[in-house]
Image (cartoon, rainbow, N blue to C red; front, side, top):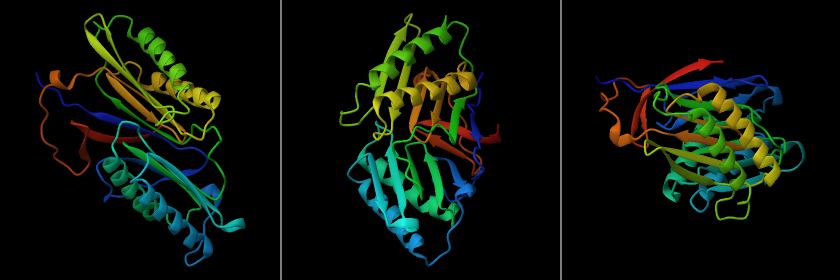
Length: 276
């Protein structure tokens, strides 16, 4: 019997962040957070000009790298910004994702001096405060399957914890790699299922803070969704995901029937938003 695969999006709002989601976002949009606590700026000011320059530069640079950071302006008009694309996406995908993100973050967080936007393939952030080397795990966004792990997946919780812990430690040794801290591992258990583990940190973190960020993210992910077929968490400085689903074994799904539905890497899913 066919079952519809659904995706739950759990958006946890912290430090008086507002969520803003535009209907014109691309299918990969996850969440946008506009920080009210940092105050606002007015249009036609130097800060506004510097922000526009920064976002334009980030968009252009995403054609050449999966990570880039930039600071523009002086004094109270200084703007810091960055983008980070997930390590397994190509330059074309990275550029398209960052381009959309820079457009939408400016549209959704009009006049905010600090904001962050998450897409499935990238994140973009700007702020009037320097944040690049600071360890942060909030605000974050979760994605998870609504389908639980089959009972036949023996000792899955312990295996997930052990394998992800191993992958996190290995990733901390990759600070100087072409894609710093990015690591994907696939392990087969009992000839029954594959566990795909993916971790990545912002290159500006040192190895210790990267490890800490990933461990905290994994803790939140397993508490939220550790009994699901797959789950994903994106934080300001790192991301963690696991996947045990086999797309070839999934039953066919009905075509999307409303504007809130979309597809991610071949999986047709439905978006459900809720606060936590």
